[in-house]
Image 1 (cartoon, rainbow, N blue to C red):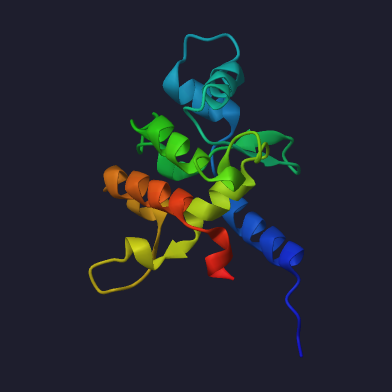
Image 2 (cartoon, one colour; image 1 turned 135 degrees about the horizontal axis):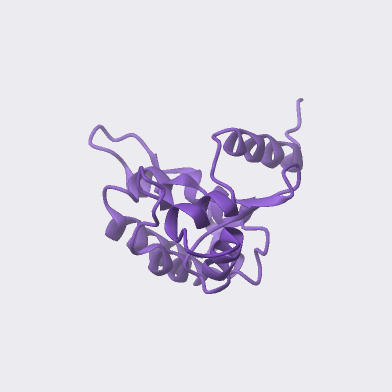
Length: 152
């Protein structure tokens, strides 16, 4: 029997997500406030205030920010903070429990039938958020109310 190593599986998903080219703190800061001296500080302030999700990239030695949070021009979408607050209602998805951001990123990028598409296919919250942020915020709130042991 081939046993799946959860750590290796999570690392593979992490690497796959990072390969999407998510913007760095500097890139995010420049797109949102080009008047700051150090644009990475802008992104850090937004992460610290719960208005932006960043994931630590050890390889790049910087935070990367999942692209669903931004419009095509790189500016931050509204309601990100509301989504992150709803996610934080789940103990495993609070900023304190998830300082690297990866638990929240994996949660948002995993497919769910709770957010199914028109043809009944499961969709990831990160894919739905740009078109329907309210549904994703409600999904995050419902997720927080569920017993995590029911999924095992």
